[in-house]
Length: 547
Image (cartoon, rainbow, N blue to C red; front, side):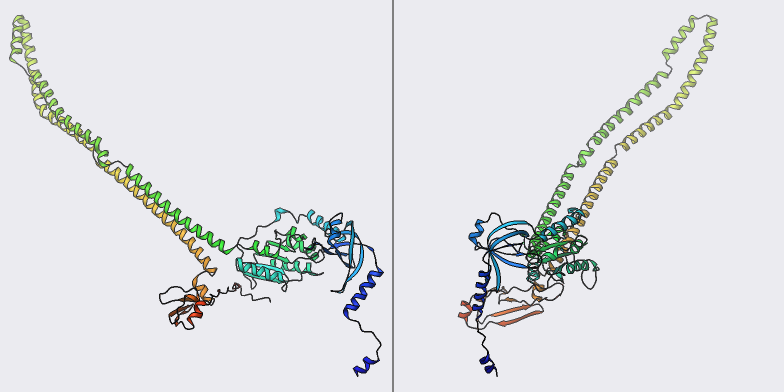
């Protein structure tokens, strides 16, 4: 049936190349030279060959354009993205993709493009509202626990971000899938930013500490969704810090101005978001070593200070030298003072006694007096004698009492002097100084103990952090690796180190087994050691693969 139908048709058969060639000749014959007005779109500078490829567009159509290397060098100005130009050239087709294009021979500017004018107007409006104010920018968390990514789940951007995060610092990543091109791209991205901010702390879906809005490079039309006013306002009002990673380094959108940080590429955003784990490990090791050295130096300085203070204290002989000398001088003066006092008292007593010479002198004087004077003298003499006798008796009676009183006063003064120069105050002051020194040493030891406990707690936290990073030997064994040891207990790193027939110990996470090496010894020795496969980073949030 089909053969009969083919035999009755008169249509000529053409190959694809013949049709493409015919169309090429028809277009070039009909449109020899034309002048086209449009807006430059998709311009990325000259290609490595020197040619430039871009498109001319208006509000309804798009025309591919090419400027050859020779023409490019003769242009009076360089094309720019979004510039409205008038291009002169000839129309042709490209058979390889069934597209028609204009080969530009001359180019002249015709004013700024409509999209660029709209973009500038929107930028001025939002800037006047303060949405791009640098004072509103938030600081990025140094070590976020969860990162939210707003991008397409099927593109290469999310792969680059996840791969870079796994290399630097594996953590939990939450992806909010959106369209990154088209009319709904801006609205979906804005809804994603608002949705991430609406997540509650401790909910079923972890609330991100940092957001990344990412997309690959493209033309102004491809990136137009990220100039959406609703998206810009959502990014500016976000309580979570936002990193904008849209397009390449030469591309820019309005969310780049509203975001807290702009990254040149999506991979650069991942590098900005998290630090390098190896750098953190080196920093922790350095701080631990410095802390240990500082503690040792502090203890040494305190010990030297205590020893210096002990050497500065006077010895007991130095403290008692002056009081002992005063005591000896007082003891020597006491004996001499008692002797002198007794002599003085005896001299006074001797002066108060009556002598024969005194009486004879008085009698001779009496004889010279008259009878009346004699009588008077006799009476006066008797009175004087009686007075002297009474005074003598009183002095004789008071002499033992005075001697005892004087001796008691001397003894009291001696006791008072002995009490003043007693060694007890000196010993008490020395004990007080020793107690103060002991108390200071005790407080110093307590302060050192508290300091060491704090440092030990910080080291314990650092050790826990390292354990969470899965750096310990047990955590590595839990991921499916094993340690191979020889008979001597030495770690075997290469297949060439294994001796055929020798005993081996295979150590796993849950135990160890013994084995005997078998196989061709020459092949084992000659075979190059195989590289240990790099383990896939374990997703800390068990979020699974998106692909």
